[in-house]
Image (cartoon, rainbow, N blue to C red):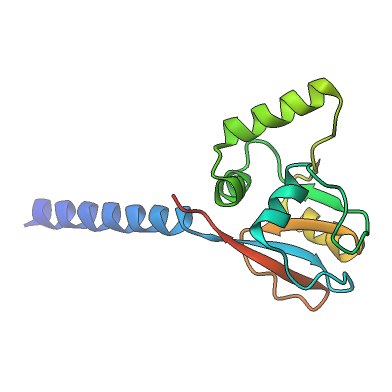
Length: 149
């Protein structure tokens, strides 16, 4: 009886863990700006252009300060896969090529999502992304990206 219970508990734990991993893989990513930023929303293409260095200005003409997470961050991987369909390695390779040519610098990297929140709250030109909806009156969500994988 004890062996059957242990086996059942193991199976239940495995099913829960797999379910949580599937949920995490499908998590929404919230692109945020300062509440005082005139941008109300962004299209996926506009976000790609900003985060992939194709443009350094919002449609309004204001300069963008793009905030990113570290290269090995799971949320970063989900974000770029949701936005561009590229893997973490492909995005890193893209930026390595651009930096080598001296064309453009990648977004500024911050160690944590809280650090991105702090920067965006204090800089009207900043844009970043989070793994959760910040529910903060000083921030505005301008795009919700879903990782397709």
